[in-house]
Length: 120
Image (cartoon, rainbow, N blue to C red; front, side):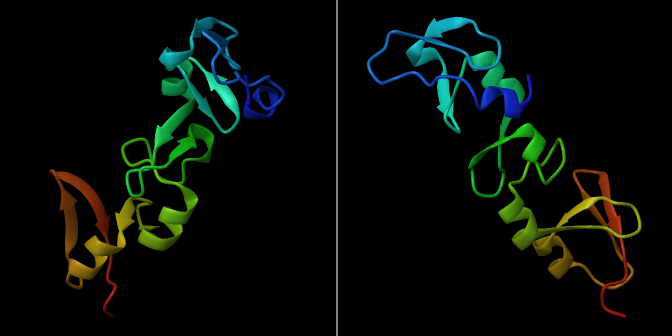
């Protein structure tokens, strides 16, 4: 189900014991799911359809992830704290760029992040 389809669902009201998931239509105890972006989501659908921005801890839709699978980001945090390497497309934080020296390759836990010359 797409976000557009989900947006027509009815949201659980406070005090209800069971809610119906806007995505998969299953019934779940209200304390076991969540309401996100005015949508009822069971725990499984919340896990599948949403992620937490690693920068600000806001929940976002997976389809709105401006980062990558390993570093989910809301658009605001991407715009203000990250960029992509123009050569290889890797996601790089501004802090990593600020600490790098010209011509050096950045590594994070052994994984290649970027090669660039920012101080030319």
